[in-house]
Amino acid sequence: MADDWLVQGPTDPHEVADHYDDWAARYDADLATWSYRAPVAVAERVRAHHPDAGTLLDAGCGTGLVGRALRASGFGGRIVGLDVSQASLRVAERAGVYDELRPADLQQPLDVADDSVDALVCVGVMTYLPDVDAVWREFARVVRPGGLVVVTQREDLWQPRDCPGVVDRLAADGVWTPIDVSGPAAYLPEAEGELGGLGCYYVTARVGSA
Image (cartoon, rainbow, N blue to C red; front, side, top):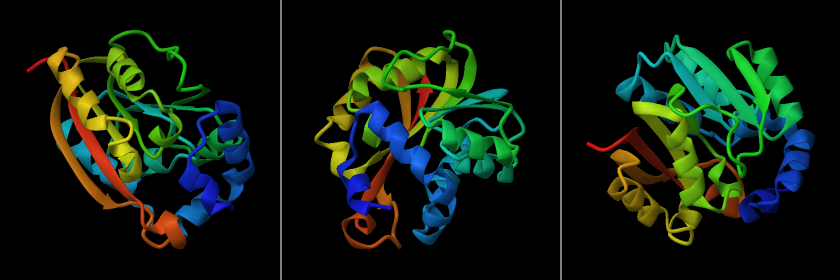
């Protein structure tokens, strides 16, 4: 596992898919070794702000760590997972916590109807999605008014990709109403080298204007 690849965060979807296909069988064990807490932290935010969501979309679900954290937190709604890595989706399917799993390139418009889910989470994925404004607007598009969006972004990409500006623009445009922007928190604290020093921001927002 090349830690420097993760630090660099390539954005070509084919490269990302190939890398995670190769990593899928070892991913859960590696992330546990690195004390990856983001899935639990996001599940806690869903539980706090929309515990009765009927359908939740896990955008970039990978091997299913977020789905498992949601179920462990008591989430009883329908969970749909999307990911660019077919091998990761197969691991997620074996976890038995998703109601539906589909391949998807999150740099493209989602094959999901407008206003069709109650909540959307995207955890540990924005590294590979450089157009933050377009992606977050697309996420909000598929969530019903009053529904929840929770996304993470690495600390080292937070300012370079103008994430604070995107949060504010979407609020000004009535796309969403921020509930909380917190961080940076520890991301992979037990990883070695530069990877272990990365922090993570959490954005929690309600779709629609206040």
